[in-house]
Length: 230
Image (cartoon, rainbow, N blue to C red):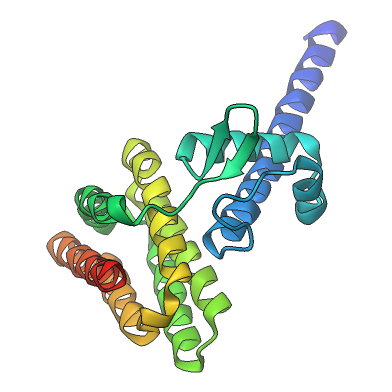
């Protein structure tokens, strides 16, 4: 191989590494902003101030902008004429429809994850669900929400169906935000129990049981939403 080709290879490898680094930073910024929206640190209707978000994430302008673009595509941030970006509102009237749409995707994802999960993923999702249960027992809401988010990530990776995951993520975040907004009407212990049942079914490689567990979780979310709306 000539010196020129070696140089080119090194440049290509360096470029690929830089791209991977940017993606990782963008993912970190996305996770941070998603959490801020879901936990109402960024309140519905609040204007998006880019400089403020860069300071909050500490990840720079480019990763933060990439994260904001993803959040716009998810519907968690909206573009308002002459007003710029703002956090989307919680729409009570549409929430039940959102849960029913999510139900079909969650059944598919749960059953597929039960079939396809790698051994380490089965261990990880059990650990996440157990962390949810521990946080619920101690009434530690932040830990509960963080474990819920982590559990979703493991299940999504395990199912290996990017199309289903891309469709369900905005719905899951909206449900998480809705739950956080009206948490006084929720039941942490029951929510943790249902997530643990889902994690166990997937970990045991039982697609039918995993699908039923996802149904039970959606029933819980629907009942919670109906109580809030009523």
